[in-house]
Length: 397
Image (cartoon, rainbow, N blue to C red; front, top):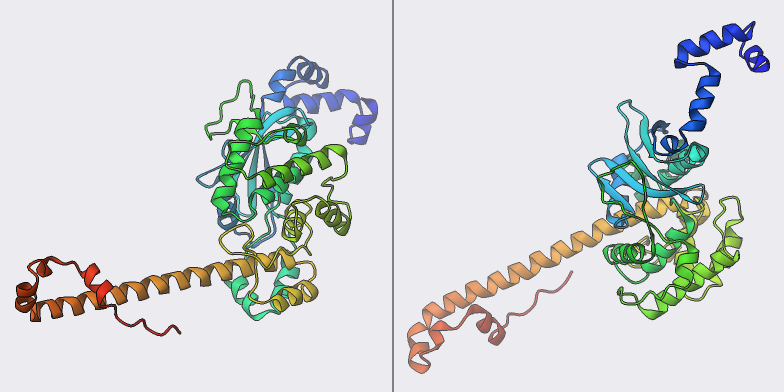
């Protein structure tokens, strides 16, 4: 204690103890003794930490991203807050709650039943998941060189690349999202968590957010049958192979590893393609050069560009922000896709309305003659008339 008091600038231990007692209401010995006797209360305590971020930052955009992909029972979005179950120290159960702080420029991270030994790791993981340390100036400069991305960035200046709480979990989510919609993949992930995940146990804490499971580990899924949950056999086999690779040490998600080596290790697993490897590298490893492009919109494979040469140009010229460029392109493609669907609906409605009006005019003119020939003609519907007298389709532009 003498060294601590001297390093803190106090001339004696007595002055140090007096200042400590005035600040914390007890002496260092009393505080140490209370901590040893209340191990359980320390585990069930709630701690709130402020997370500063670089501006601009769009909390609404990244929250919407997680809301549609939240695994039922494991994640939840309620209002403007994000909830999630986590493992601390590989064994203890905990829940994190993240919401905008009252102070501008900060997020509020609340830890429920998270051991203090895992505090630094959990805080750093939260910063990575919500991309709070993104190099805003570099992103603005690089994406500003592209005409389309510059407009998108001007409308959405705070867009970020979402990370992942667990590398194995996001890999399973990527596999589930192959060739299906985001909603379908989320439903499958919820079924896997409900059947094979560990039940959440938080003594003395009640969180009303629907959280009840921890996502299963590689050891739990390695021998799981994955039957009767709506999953095809090939996809189930791929999940088991990934789990076996993680359990055997052939695949790990250390952010310090070489992204190319990680990609090669993931591609060696049967059932894992280029898009899955790039997507996992983008979210789990936070690799800024990962670019999951060239597949379908409307799914998690929808990070596509209009032409392959655009993807190559962005990946070569926009080194370091290719992942963010992919998200911007994805948003633009989704917008154009929805506009095309709306245009098709309007065109079909106008064509049907035109045919109906033509039928009404014709029916009124020839009602008497039609009735003499066929007494049931007056009761025929416009739909039947359209089928018999279909108008020529308008030439598509």
